[in-house]
Image (cartoon, rainbow, N blue to C red; front, side):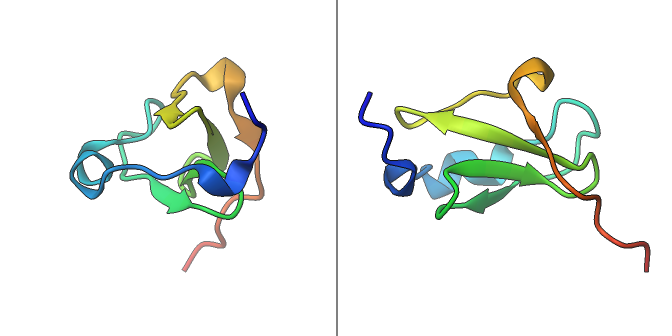
Length: 68
């Protein structure tokens, strides 16, 4: 593993189908951080060697999106 988070890319077809395992809402790719973000859950799931790790135990807590 190189540790280069910028190399994290996900096939667009797959990205359209991935959802947060907690909220079942779509995930947003943050290529710069190498993560898939669920604003609804306030979690960022890592992408390791091009593979999304959609385990809550592996997710990083982020600030939840403000309520509109």
